[in-house]
Length: 149
Image (tube, rainbow, N blue to C red; front, side, top):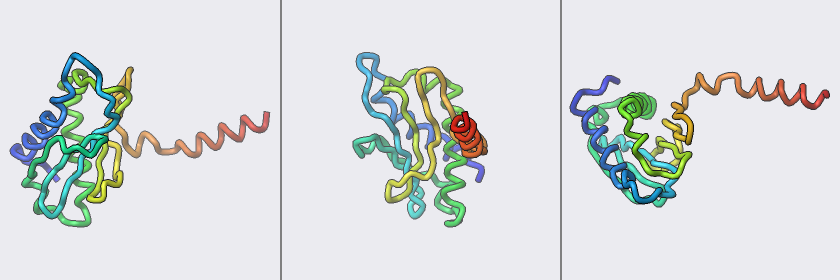
């Protein structure tokens, strides 16, 4: 789904509001993940930290009309786009969270659907299926070669 300008701005504002408490230059927080929970029935996006503290909440109008079968995949795509743009703007360079930390998409029961962004000391990685494709086969081949020697 293509986000409208209003929905895009709403999501960006919610993410910035959620992260503003971690912009302090005084001390690094030990929060290790930020959770994004889209709620299909209301169209809300709720952001939490590791302690289940609600950091921000917003209604995303484009999500209220989304087809149930495609909801999470559509939302995942939307959020990756927003996070990518925020990363390019340097937002995550300003955050004082203990690295590595992740931004994670979760469902209504707070079960992980996808890791959207992983930020560590040296680089930021967008997690996607292409990155992990073939990893099992490579690891199996490596282990087999190692055990044969």
